[in-house]
Image (cartoon, rainbow, N blue to C red; front, side, top):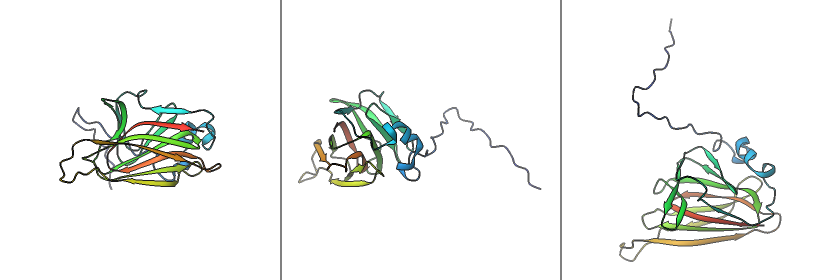
Length: 193
């Protein structure tokens, strides 16, 4: 006969368990009830005014992998790795924790016809994948690949500021973006109906 033993508590005072991957990334994102509750009308409702999402409204720190954070105009959905709100010389930015395995979705609380994203890539980063997401199933409708800035002799130290702007056709509005791969610093997202 086998007896079940209770699980022992960790002995170390420094033990802080990582949050389990919540349903924020499990399965299809469009079916996530926590995310749908944070979106106006459950998603797909068109925005009526211009919205600017900077990251100054958050305290600097991590959004842990598998969790989401609701902001005034967007919802940050951290995928397989943490994302960080970090103070820089130009204000707070949303950035990653790893050089090449970042995974984050920024879902807009409304759908928009035009999205403008201001970001910076670092010379020490890997290549980056960015995609704009549709308002129905949060699937990619337009993708961009940003190669790591390189110098002729590998001595470049600095960062490349880039502004991406996407204009959707009527009835094909976008409601988010996905970022995978290398390290980025996202400074501001401007959303226009």
